[in-house]
Image (spheres, rainbow over the protein chains, first blue to last red):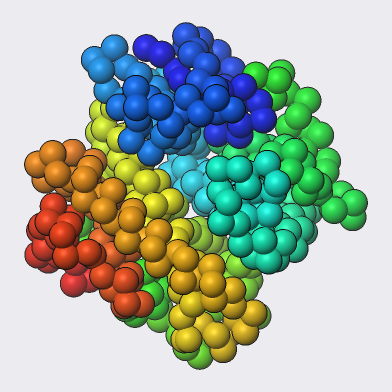
Length: 205
Length: 205
C-alpha cells in the first residue's frame, strides 16, 4: 500500500494525514510535487485520470482517489476510533457537517484560490477575478454562520466527539488562512474551536 | 419521522426519494415549495439554518440536512441492499464516484444555474454571467471525461453494482438537462449508462 500525497499547504493530502494520525495507522507515503506538476504527468494520470492528490494505491493494484474516499477505506478496515460516527444518527450528522464544511467553506474558498489568487494565474490564465473577489465575502459570511452554529457550546463540529468533519473544517480554515482569508475577529466560537482542534497532535501531521 | 422535500426538478430531494425507493423504505413526506420560498421561511430555518432541502426530522426531534447524510442514515438503519458499498474497497470506490460526480458535474452545473440561468436571476440579481457561461464548457468537457471512464464496459459508475454514485450522477444529469446542458451526442457510454439507470423503477420516484 502506498499513499501519494503532497506536503502542506495542500489541504486534501493533509486531511488524510490527520485522519491516519488520529487512527494511529502508518502508510508509506510518496510525495508528488504539485509545483513540479508531477500530478499532471502521464505516469500519474494512470493512477488518477483527474491528476489530483491524494491517491491510495492498494496491493491489488486498485487506486482510490478523493481524500474522503481514502479515509472511508481506512474507517472500514479499522473502525476505532470512529471518525465517521458510530450510531446511525452520528454517522448522518458527521456526513452532514463534512458536507456543510465543504459547501460553505471549501467551495467558495476554492473559487477565491482559482479565480483571484495570483499564484494560480500561471496555470489558470483565464481567471474570473470579479467572481473570485465576490467569493471572499461569501467565505467571511459563511465563517460567521459556522461561528453561530458552534456557539451552542458543543466541543466539536458534529457534536461531542472529534470527527472527520473537524478534519475537513480545520484543513479548510488553514488553507483559507494561507490564501489570506482569516476567521473574522468577532467569531469567538469558531476561533476557540480552531484552537482546540489545532492543539491535537494530529494537526501537525 | 418526516422527510421535508420538493417535487422535481429539485435534484437534492430527488436523490433521497430514489435511494428510498431502491431500499423499499417508505417515509412520510412533506412538500416545501421552493417557488413559494417556504424553505427560507423562519419556521423552516429552525429545521435547517441554511434553508435548504431535503431535511429529515426524526422522532426525537433531531434534524438531518444534506441529501447524502439522510441517505447514510437509512443505510446504517437498513444496510441491504447496500448502496454505499459492502467491502472496504467498495465503500471507498462508491464514495470516490459520489464525489467525482459532484465535483465534476454538480459543481460546474450549479455555477451555470446560479450565474447564467434567467430563472435564478430573481433571487440572485448579482449573477456573474461570464463565469456561468464558462461553466457550460466545463460541464460538457466533464461529461466527456465521465464518458471515457464509463467506456470500459462496467455496468454502473462505481463498478458492477448499482450504488449511491449512480443516483448522484443521474440526478445531476437530469438537472443539467433541465437547465439546457445535455450529454454531448458523441458520449455513447454515458448515454447508455443514463438509459440503463433511468429504466429502473426508482428513477420515477
